[in-house]
Image (cartoon, rainbow, N blue to C red; front, side):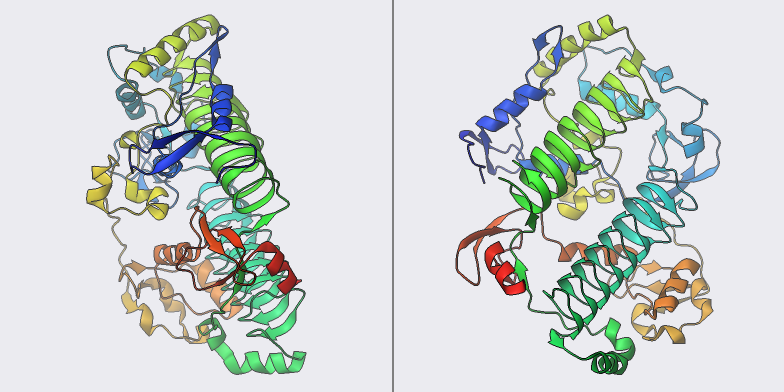
Length: 561
């Protein structure tokens, strides 16, 4: 969908999926604006050859969130937890060694060879420069978390910060005692819930705000003590969308007993076609306080942002995924924050600027080209230090070389990603089997983690429904996933959580539970539809096959408010 005052100037065919996509006059202005300048000469970034979905797939093939392994630190030989499997040949260091003065990434600097492609030389540098085993900072007793910071007593939490005593969750912020949750903010004691904010004691729920003691609910605001209900505002003692007195509701829940966690009745929800709040001239979904944004998702406080996902407080950015605030002039970047003038790069941390084709550079880097895992460095090319004048003279020559090899203007090829496609977030949003992944030049990992020895194995389907019937010995057992048959274990902290809240032991592997939650999420794509109430033409992120009643914003507000 083209925004107001935007005109299509060219229609292209994606060179990967062959789908048609448009280039607008606004796009041309952006590409010109983010094109680098050296000695007053602008080196134009051309329009992309791939559609926005294929570009995102390529970026996310560089993001391993959930695949964790035990391997040796290549500096000390000690066991560490890492996002790189033991069969991965790259050098991996523990957190304390990588951030110490044990080595300098500049020691691996190399001259650029104009007889070779950029990608071949970058791949060679990848093999040499030591990598951080796991991406987590300022955390306590949270060794099994990744893409996180300020975690305390957390286990298998991915992408989040300022959490405590939480497990098996993704995109979790400022929360405590949350398990099996996704996209959760400022919440406490929640389980198997998604898209919730400022909630307490909410289980098996979606799209809640300011709710307490809700089970199996969706699209509710400021509700308390509700069960199996949807589209409620300021409600209390509501079960299956029916109002009860306090005493009758308590009797209803008492009679359900432990079945309240296994037999919520799915509601035929009325749902708002798009969740866009206080936005101007913007398209996408789950947006708040955005202006002139197109195809943006799960984001807040953006201006002039396009084809992006999970961003905060940024402006003038295209093709930018995850997740930090206060960035500007960013293009074709995965995971960056507080950055300015960054393009074609992967994971650029903290107050960085004027960086191109670089990977995991941190702590205030600037003026980098083709660098890997640098800390607070400036004017470097392929991890080699240059003077400012030398840098400004050499980089344009490399750009001209990359133009001749058709490498300038696009993100790193997936074929040199350090991860197998099946290890990455790309596989969650763009599923491929091994033959098709390899056919598309993605990498694949066949590494299998050996399961530890246990006293016994129990089928998930045979677990007791009542947590009171589960013995302490279960900590020494393996549970066989009822879907995949893959074994998994529970930990002490987890068992205590289930007992504290009267929740049953899960019957599915943590990975399968994550997949189940993923299936409940809408894709980052928009479809044409009609309002089920007024028949007005609308757009929605719900698939055409969805059975839910889609309402335009006006009809939804009249129905709920």
